[in-house]
Image (cartoon, rainbow, N blue to C red; front, top):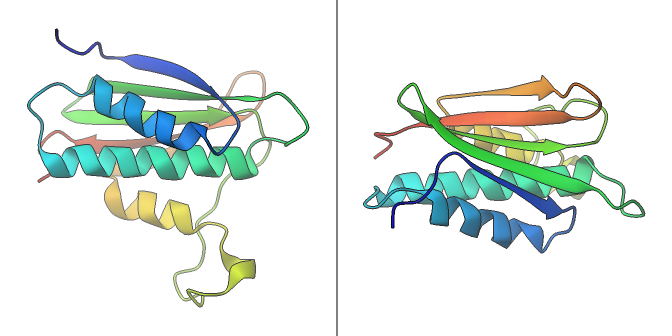
Length: 139
């Protein structure tokens, strides 16, 4: 049975949603696929969902994170949306790696390094989506 793309999943804004998002990406990919593409897409999903849970939601509210994965223009595109205000930013590359206070933005450094392109897109009502693309031939 071929996987269905595009895929859309919603998850509670909880750290346990990170492995569920990784699994959703893995289950959606057509077989066969290159192991590096699989691993990179799962890593992108982990980083984007983790950032959405940590920075795009409030613990005392019942928020959802949305994940979309679709193929277009020779890429797999992954978008993760959250209801939070603000825009994610890259951490400066020269921060000390063990500086706990400066850990924000490092996930986006990884997204930036892995992706052919990425962007932050505002949602119509509230929140934003971070969209990242990996080429099909990502060996």
